[in-house]
Image (tube, rainbow, N blue to C red; front, side, top):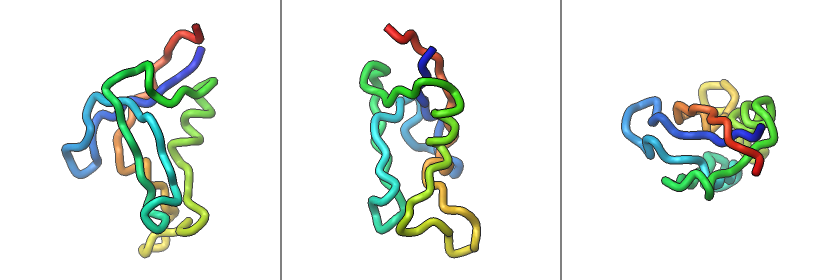
Length: 89
């Protein structure tokens, strides 16, 4: 069973609530990342299983792997994400 990620909002509030992750470039914006969301589940990034989706959520850019506070830079974790099972068909 495949998985997609649906955004429940930004950690700071707002954001593309209810939309699905369509693309993510961790190197964009000088290593701060750029995510694209879509309201259409059919256009969402698909992952073969939960571990692959969860690992992708923690992707760190090679150009800026650490934030100024010394913690790992994982841009997608600014969003609260839900992992949704989808049919493989």
